[in-house]
Length: 494
View 1: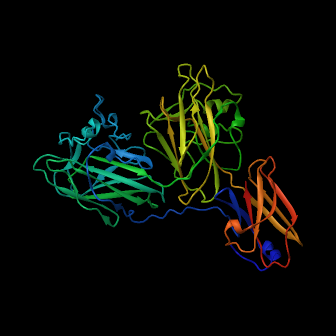
View 2: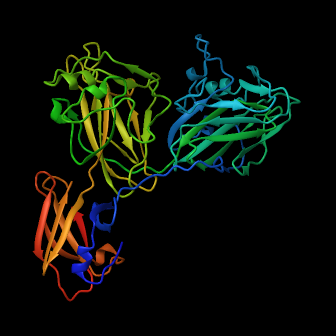
View 3: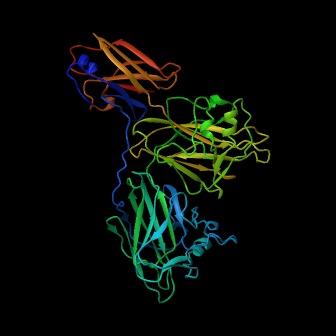
């Protein structure tokens, strides 16, 4: 923040005034000479360094971490062509399903020099007491020689923190062996494959960089049974409103500034604007990623019967979790401190749909009330709005969960609703300040201090009032003392 010597010259030097959202719904007036929007610069470099935990002997289904949000899973030795019920994705463990192929856009794969991978499905069961876990750990890819094996994946969000978990289990008598895992510059302790005993798993964490990828080298590359990657970035808590039944195009909020959207299964969404908002497929949200269980789409749901043909068409398509497990999606690129609005729609509406189908949406530590999918008897589905202040991760992850059917989403949008100071000027003792993008008819307090570094509690209330119905305000008041060398102002919403 640039400080001038008098209030008059302080205001006169401003090229643009913006507001940055602060915790507790506080908006700070920041004086800048260019756009105040944050820019995420992704810089490619060497693979991120992994911080490894100590290896742990396999013991039971609670071994399988459920921290954060699932990003991708892999059971590399499983035969995904088997439709007889023995595929890995028919055997969830601790609520996690391991895919027989690189899942969720993570694009898992092996590489290495001269390795000879093969599949074997008769390793010794670790006898954990969980039949699914035991089954998965009797299958692996293995290497006939001692060359390193490299496991890699990609499509991560730069700046996010991830957890990677790997399992090794042979367990047969006279089969000793260990592998170390190297990620970036860091190498783990040896991880045992088990000798007449269960093998071990290991967990590592890292921060994704601009390459959006990670690779881990196993030395020697003996075998690999299972892999999972989880996004454990601390995400902002979403404050959810009450779900609303779909009724017409005015459902689509235009508050604030459009940031991005997603029309999951409608390739023509960009030709179907609703209330001035154009939904996109693929999503135009920065670093947008669907989680691994968002694996199916459908485009023949019932029309909600609103007065808007475009709205009706868009709501007849959705993506859903075919396994019925919680489904996640995430994005990044937001400005830390800014206030954002998310709006999610769920709609089925078919006569064959049971009335009780519902889902919740979780953002950060907060879970919404249940949204109804709707049916021929109960009418259209519902939408919900939530708000949050972006944190230093610049990202957000939402988790959809349904107790009675596949979680799904039909439409989604994000809007930046940060109240912003659009102009500020001084004439004598008169301070004139204009702001926009505030809460409709919401109250505000204008705080004042000669020292911008003081704690907020030590700032003085200079004026109170309300935004208008459109979220705008204009303040003209005798607040300036020409004898004060400088003054700073914070616009605080209530």
